[in-house]
Length: 169
Image (cartoon, rainbow, N blue to C red; front, side, top):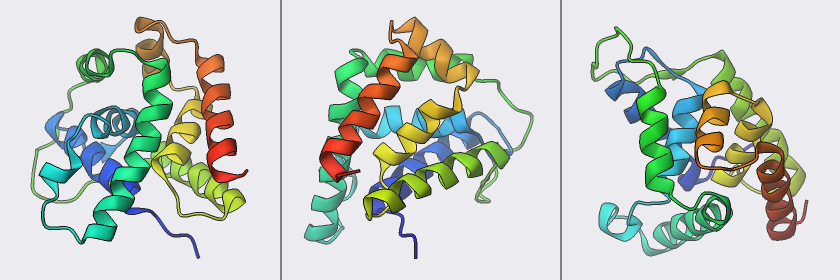
C-alpha cells in the first residue's frame, strides 16, 4: 500500500491553491513544482500550530530535506517561484471552492514519485515528487531553471544522489 507523507499532501495542497489562484481547472505539473518552491519557504510551525507534535516534526524533517536538496541548486527560491508563477498561463476557470484534480501529466508525475518511493520502501515524499518532476522535462520548469542558472541534468543527478543517500535507494 502506497502512503503519501503529510509533507507531500501539503505540497499537493499548495499546488492546488496556486492552480486555483491562476484560475486553472486542473493541477498541472508546473503547479506541483510551484508547490515545492513555496513549501520550503513556509514557517511550518506557525502555519500548523494545531498539529500533533510528531506530525509536525515529520513534516518539518521532510521539508528540511527538500529545502536542502532544492536550496543547494536554486539560490533564490523566491525569485524562481515568482518567475514561475509569472510565466504560467492564467486560465478562464472560476476560482470556486471545489477541489481541483490533477491533469493526466500531474497524475503521471505522482505515479513516478510513488514508484521511486516503493524502491526506497518509504512513504511518497516531496523529494520523490521533485525527482519525478525533473524527469518529466516540462518546458516551464526548464525555463525557470534556466532563468536561475540551474542546469537540468546536473540538478536531476544531484536530486537522485540526494535521495539515494538519504533513503537508501
